[in-house]
Image (cartoon, rainbow over all chains, first blue to last red; front, side, top):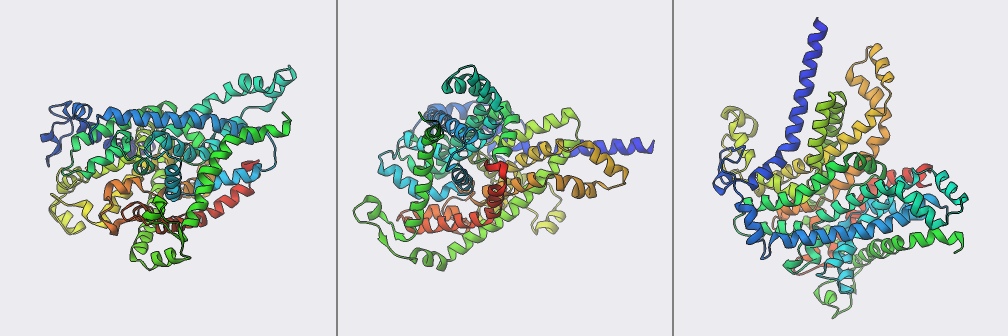
Length: 283
Length: 306
């Protein structure tokens, strides 16, 4: 009798704690979305209004039509998509080739290469800001999305290779050897045997690179001058340069930038977690 | 193609990117930290001027460097500790919860983790807004005597959190903690699932308390996981820049950390890139020294690099 009561109290305490943690995790996200759909008199108030009483699309319409910094928010969403997709496409090919090399071949220079990868996970990207800025400027890619893509590929590549290497290594070598014996060429073996098995890992790695490029603020801030080239994070920061902060519009923009990432995350969460722990770095 | 050439061909594109866009720029930053690089040099009208250790001596003499260093170190120490403690506690909680509740909580944690740093900073800035922020509303709910006793003030209406360096960092800590503890929790959970339950049953039979079981069974078995998570948290929390830029901006110099200090030196008019580079080199050295043990261990570990 006493035992069951104690167990029940324990279970209530556990679930209570879980609800507190859940609120802490989710409420800030909810508050962003809720603010985006509240009219201004419900935003700028000292009262606590949990649900928008009078839900409105005025902020959403405003960022689309009036825009931010002189352009519709679509322009910045478009730029962010271009930069993130460009980073993923180039990064996926480069990291898959390199990951295959380091996990399928023994060659001179392999260990030093791995050590370089490891070290560049410790070096803060911010430290390279100045020289990358001068370099990009030097080759005429300043104020161009391509310059931003190049930088993001470089920033995500060491981790991409490390993460993907684990997925390649997990594919049994015997499968490829069997294909070999059957007379398949190296290329066919790679394309028909290894690639399909590594594809899920490639997806996880790509999503990681996508999110990193999507979130990147600092390089976008210094490499893009004209407001038509801003990415979403730069556009969001622009709000704070103005007098009187338009929280409704900020939250609408922030929601627009955040929701795709949350959806992505939830889709691949399992693989993300194992991949991150194995590859051992996020951002 | 001779077989020995194949790995090098596969490696070539990645190697070019890493050598050209990471290693060479790193060398450049070090070189630049010994040079004077201002507007004329950036425009290319005058060659970079070698100044020896002048950039370093100048920043070491500047109080701003020391406050930035203090902010960086204190912030990282506090945030890493809080993130690991909260993350581990929630990981243990997830392991004990029923299936449905644990699933719901994981989805909630993932949502917080997925929020882009810029959005996270914006959200927390809004929660702590002086006029319409929810933090002030919550604090006003406290009975006046309690609030007075705890914080020395009873009325929180209009309290300007972002005017003071200490409270800016308080919000920054909350913001980064909120965004990073979920990753620790799910990683710890993954580790816990790999521990055979017989070990816990044996501990229970021996009459071990949960606290003792954690330190005697769980912690030693998960030591490698904790080592990686600690290193990762240190790396992330040492260079927080985007969030600080949103919360504090560049006008409050008291609130600079090393990243923001280097950024401002290099890119605010008049640009002093040599001095910015020196700060960046110092930051990198600190990080490499802290993570040195970890790197050495990874290099030693056969399976990690072979």
